[in-house]
Length: 456
Ligand code: GLU
Image 1 (tube, helix red, strand yellow):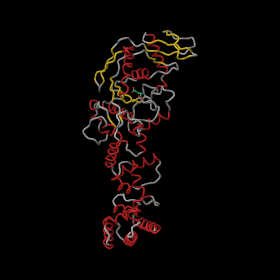
Image 2 (cartoon, helix red, strand yellow):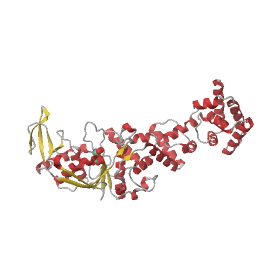
Image 3 (cartoon, protein in one colour):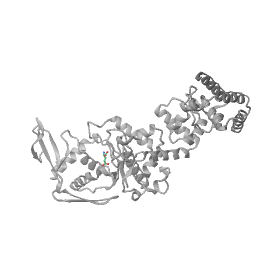
Image 4 (cartoon, helix red, strand yellow):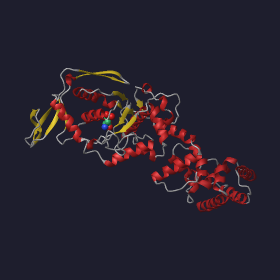
């Protein structure tokens, strides 16, 4: 059975690159009806935190990448946090010493950088010691990467390396082998930055006489300048995109098309599981394109029904603590012009903000013009007596106002648009007026009249 894992170090937030690695593992497990395991690699005691672990788990759940075994839900092969597996690492490190593949290095307790001696007997003289792996001389380490093909390393320039530190913690290269083996991991899909670690890991597998898993090293996500995507390029945290109002399915969709060739660009990844084959993952470097991501998000937003959009919007509003409620009808008329839930909120805000402000361009180009007052006064009069307040009648009324004042429709429409919403970019004017409703339209026209009169 296929068993894969995502093994984040909880030293910060979930990076989009990590999310993409998790996605590929998740898809691979689902496609092969296997298991997706979450393992927390918290052996860096200075930088690992439980908050970070929690954040990473929250983000994975938000993305919909649920795991079958992990620190929070347990499983047959636990514990799933490396800090809870120290006994195992020690046991296996000592076994390597016993088999002649490792030795103890003993340090001067007053000068811990100074190696006093090495031995194959457990030191008992009170000095700190590490367990060091003995790298065999002039051996060729080969493995067949599922993406990159055959990779070969010689041990010629490889030094012996510590596997167990004096504080009892394993190093990454050791813990990862013990865990992947004991957890029955069949395939290791991870970032290309780990290729150089793989030979060390394979040597450890060999020393135990264990069969290594299959490896697939995925190209890293790069920034525009072709260096690994980092904060210097812009946001990289999954949570950032959640706050900015991205839909999780859109973010996952984007991460999937970043280096995985599929026939369509916009899809629901949960419907794509069957077409996920590793040979479709590109071996080329991929550049994170913020604009493309926004475009993908806009596409996903427009695929939602109004009710679905409302549900996502409310979830987002809760998450970021955005104060104002926006009625569904307002979301519906605002959705066409925006690409994220946050943009939707900002675009819709004037509809629910009774104290909306007037933009500078509205004031200069329309509110200050001599005909503004007569346009708004006439609109007040006509809308007050309008019986059927629907799109058709609203449009007719506005055109009649323009005709009777002998002013161009564009000028009339923009003057009214800004009067009602404070801005010149809004959803369609007629629908906006209907959504505001008669009473609110009249109140807002009056408010603007007062405002304009104070201008002069
Ligand atoms: N903890 C490692 C990392 O976050 C995992 C690497 C691996 O998948 O082997 O990079």
